[in-house]
Length: 217
Image 1: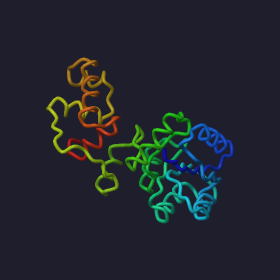
Image 2: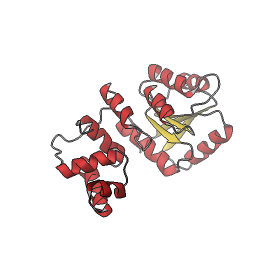
Image 3: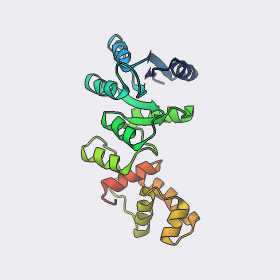
Image 4: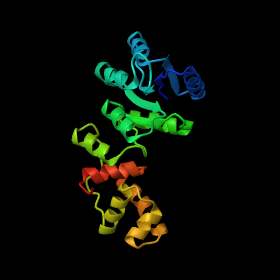
């Protein structure tokens, strides 16, 4: 199994120490750099022949914040993926983070399983999509060619599946979908699971990408 090299930039030493301790328990991962701000991180990357595969980036940091550091990493090391790891969970911050070149967005209280999933997905697919992504952001990135998510060419949806898909993209629960379409919540749940399998994605955000790419929403 190939090593996955990681780096972290966060101005809180407790956060850096805790993150390092977590990663040390997973043999596949190696933390190359642990920096207190964006400038120190970039200096560390420049001084090492081995590039990190994934950088975990805080937003609020002195000297060079996360957005600034992400843009510079994109320019100098385009093969490095940046995952923002922060407490700022708002539409404004998420859109700024992704449009500045970030490949995903995680809350600082994410569990280790979510962190591992994010690392693997961003390396495999280029982005880590989760519930924080908005439809407008997906449309923006797809329009500018920054998301190149591929789907099978022969996926055909029934009228009812399209109705359910649109409701999912509106972030409605199974119960709300059931009320809207006059079906039971169990039937709505069954449609949701069937759509995930049929389209070949794991999360609702994958359904949203499919819907945007195919002009369903």
